Image 1 (tube, helix red, strand yellow):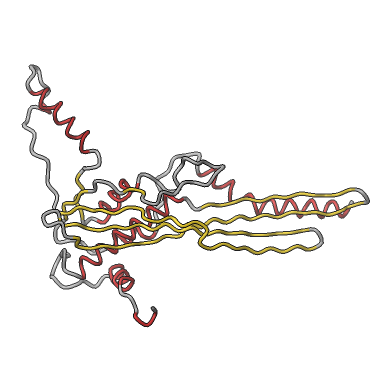
Image 2 (cartoon, rainbow, N blue to C red):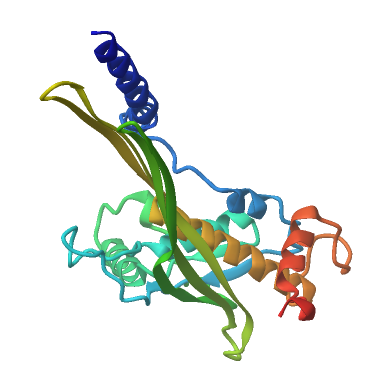
Amino acid sequence: MKKIMVLGMLLAALQGCSLREPMSAEQDTETPTLTPRASTYYDLLNMPRPKGRLMAVVYGFRDQTGQYKPTPASSFSTSVTQGAASMLMDALQASGWFVVLEREGLQNLLTERKIIRASQKKPNTPVNILAELPPLQAANMMLEGGIIAYDTNVRSGGEGARYLGIDISREYRVDQVTVNLRAVDVRSGQVLANVMTSKTIYSVGRSAGVFKFIEFKKLLEAEVGYTTNEPAQLCVLSAIESAVGHLLAQGIERRLWQVAGDNSVPQNETLDRYLTQNKVDPESE
């Protein structure tokens, strides 16, 4: 009887440790919240301010990996998000360096402008659409690129222990997503800056179990566990934000765009860190 009580308490403790994190995660999803942001987002906010914002457009930022989720999960669902263009526009606006013009939904915008012009010819036209429509604003920079790689099972491993029929184990797997971002001069078509950034996607699973004879012909067997997967879309978002930061750092260093104040490269901790990462150490190759 004492053995049963001890094993029951051990199972309860293992179950409590294993289920505490998933339960809190489920409670968090009950109410919609703002998308959590990584350190790369705050890096964009801490970049030096521009002398003047750049007029930029994004026509698309496609998934170029061709990767689909493995079966039996789904043979038609892609491994990475198809909304990377929206993520890129969000990162560009967050940086404070760009005025982003709508181009991904350009056809919808042109259709609506046609409807407004047709309505202006009718009587009793609302006052808010009587004014003549100005021409659409032109951009001087175009952002191109996409999600160019998604590598699964880049690294995997784990550890565990078993003693007297009681075992605890942990397994992990690391995937990796890579994005490319380049700034193109609209007038000349020249690629002004080009960067590639990678972000790991971490998955971990933990389990604990008991397999033990408590009496003759009486077997106690129990197992608990859970798996945590880092959201792939948040990793793509972080990689895109990092790419925008590196793109800004390249442009500032090459004097492609100017910061507020004098023309020298400002002393900024975030900018210095990105510039250091952009430089390759020949001895490390």
